[in-house]
Length: 233
Image (cartoon, rainbow, N blue to C red):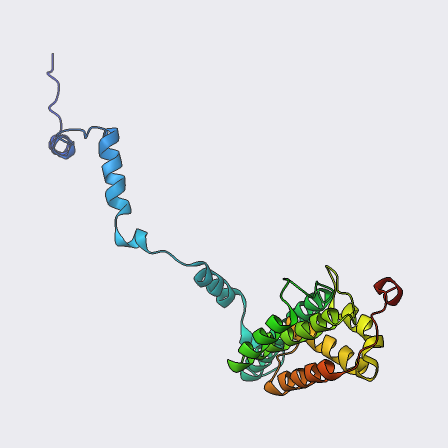
């Protein structure tokens, strides 16, 4: 019986390479603590600590999706960029103007707020106006001076003030007792409202006008006070 032939030399060499290439030991699966440490070490690398702000992301998105140089078809790149900038400035100006008008409208709608916020007499209100004028606070000076005028009219019996009275109502009540000065009283009431609610930034000239009007009222011969329900009806 013929003995089996020996394997070829090439087969021996291949087997040797396979055996030598096999790992000596299969690595074990890392436990939970090792996995957490590996993840923490990975996340601690500098590239993971770099964050992008919201504005950077917005700017990046705009840069990728908007090309100002081609915003206006057919126009040169420089002209396209210029037109876009002008348009943005115009829109911002329109928004500012709209916001300002809305603010003024809200302030004007509050012009029926109560004229008096405390029970000071005319002399105390006049002193407050003088003190504000001495420091250049013309707004406080104008507001307090008008209040002093109205309170003095009440103290002299020319009008009867009441809780919740407004500057407009005070001017209407004082129109008959003041006679020729009633037009100035209306003007003073409008100035009071405009200054109090920020529509007008007063100057020293307006403070001087209000002060002169207060002196005219103090020297005027006043008629008896009318009934408020008759005047304001």
